[in-house]
Length: 221
Image 1 (cartoon, rainbow, N blue to C red):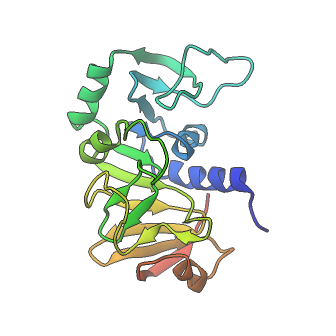
Image 2: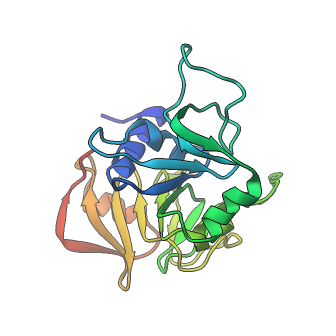
Image 3: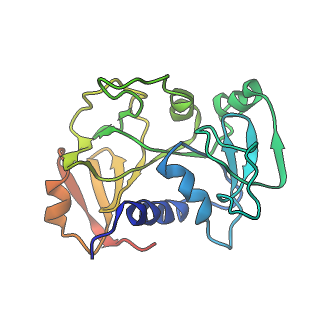
């Protein structure tokens, strides 16, 4: 059964949440990645940072705990957990540039088979800038891309990016609605597949060659 856009994004976010380890400091990019905070497994504590100056970001608020003054870097309302803290932008980027962020989860417009990422410049669209993405892709120990596999049917996993690069050889893992793809010395290696798709369908939606892991398993969220 085909998923609508919201279901697709939540499916991706749930799978990404399983990658996060207990005790990690994690930064979530704007858009789809912010959903990851809603799905962290109950047996692990993950500390979320927002580059506009917060640690201890919690799940999205509902009517009972909504505070319009507390928002993430994308301007979306968030909660702040007990023990969370607010600080200035210089301190926030000091955490990122100082290598204290274990994992960053980012959206992307394109990812190349060598791990290059382009995620801020759409031709013909007004863009204020790349935000903290350049700092995050170079400062975080691990970069995970959470995105839909294609854009209106056009592949986003490419041999080479055609948009301006945010970072070079930075991406380690990609999670889409079709599967989980590791970026390694082979290029793109499919390590988990959504059983709703065939390997052939995933390859057809991918511009670059897709190496199939000998230990390929079904994607579970």
